[in-house]
Image 1 (cartoon, rainbow, N blue to C red):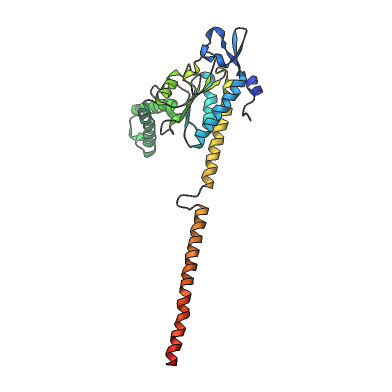
Image 2 (tube, rainbow, N blue to C red):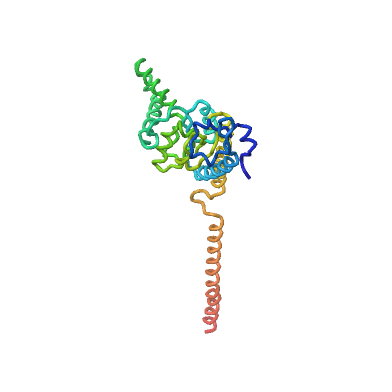
Amino acid sequence: MSITTFDQLLEAGVHFGHLKRKWNPAMAPYIFMERNGIHIIDLYKTVAKIDEAAAALKSIAKSGKKILFVATKKQAKQVVAEKAAAVNMPYVIERWPGGMLTNFPTIRKAVKKMSTIDKMEKDGTFDNLSKREKLQISRQRAKLEKTLGSIADLNRLPAALFVVDVLKEHIAVREANRLGIPVFAMVDTNSNPNDIDFVIPANDDASKSIEVILDAVCGAIAEGLEERKAEKVDAPAEGEEAPVKKERKARISRKKADDAEAAAEPAAEEAPVAENKEVEE
């Protein structure tokens, strides 16, 4: 059963594409018709593609890997920040830092710089600085927080990217393609879907459209995380043996004890006979 219905997508305006003159011919398979010079997206294909993407994202989340959400356009920022934070996934809603994926170690150094400044504030080093130095460091910290604060917990390259508007985020898509990181994306009628691994044909300009798609994919991610948590609870703790293995070992130990006892019985019976012979003599 689909996690998002046709009516939900229709109500959110997911079907509205761009003007016909702005279209990308590669999006032809996902276009249903043209109305008043505007392309209309085939929502049946959108529903199928959402289900396909959601299943893959659920699998990634279940494996414990991170999915990086990217959306720097005004109407997507707030929605993406809320939905990604709810499932504890990193996101970029300010300017994409060039080389964030292809030059990841440098980005990690900048994130560590934030941690160093925080440590200075805690251990009292910050108080020993001059007023001007304090101001400079505070500004630097605020700037880093704005651009990199949402990826502070991203210690390694993400397992996948989820992008809203592939035209605007073309640098992020290019970096992911170069590194072989799968890209999930909302793709409008004016965009090229060929560089996207999981295409979700949809209106990427309306906040309601963005929200309904993110609800579906983040819901699947949340399910994957819950299943991972449940499996961890059911699995035996480190150093603890699985119940079946434990029972098998106990059974073998009992059998060995029984065999040893059975072997000792004849020796015990022979001893009194020897004593009787000595008495008779």
